[in-house]
Image (tube, rainbow, N blue to C red; front, side, top):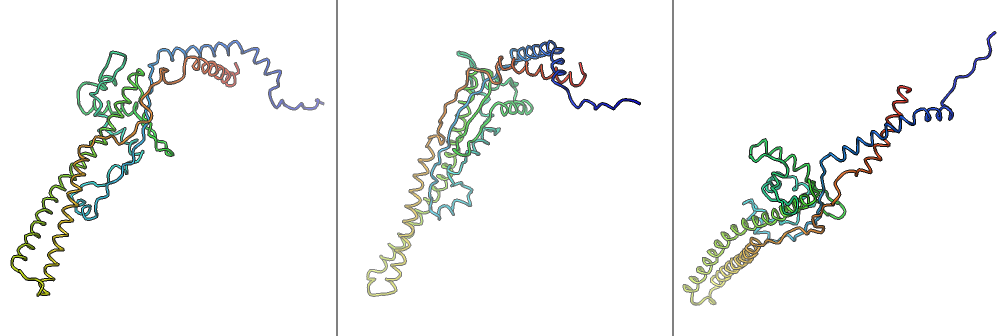
Length: 313
């Protein structure tokens, strides 16, 4: 009779693990060093980029309280009277990636190194032509390098720009902030110009109506020397006086709003407040060489262990 069946081993013992380590530690070290050297070489030859950051908050400008009558008259004309107060931080985050704002920067100069400045078009290696294909490629590169984040709690908008040198990253961030300020001022002045043109026409009409009402009252007095003896004339006088007063009030209101629109039209005060000026770190983006070497060591050991588990060698 054969002896009792021995149970199969259920796992690897500690002694087996020590044997494997003694047998493979040299090859694991070689794999680790090789992976570390490869990552360090990649870190040395890869193009270095630097990120510049700038932060700002949008000023909550007070919306002008136009009288309801003037607002009703202006609305059919397509004149926006909402002011800048409704622009949220998310608006500026989306504005940074718009084609209009980015294309306005392509011919601006950026200081790459002290004493050397190039255009944004050249900085992003774009063709000098303005064909649709070259513009599309330039916009894609700009959108990859220029971004904005919003802190929902504080409303702070942070602009980040990546470029080949710290100076170029800071310069690009300055250009983006300047473009946002220019956009705000230009749109506000355009709105004020449209409103000013509308109000000028309305003031002229209101003045003409006021003169007509005053002339009617003057003619009434010339034709009726004695008014106190006739209730009908007294009533007619009151009605005509009210017409003059109403037209006078309308003319005064429109004139006041016209002066405000003229002031707004030349107002070039920026509507954002920069709380963190553009600044780029002197350290390039991504992990440093020491970190890459450490990652390579760990990666090499892991790859060697995986090979041992798969092939047994």
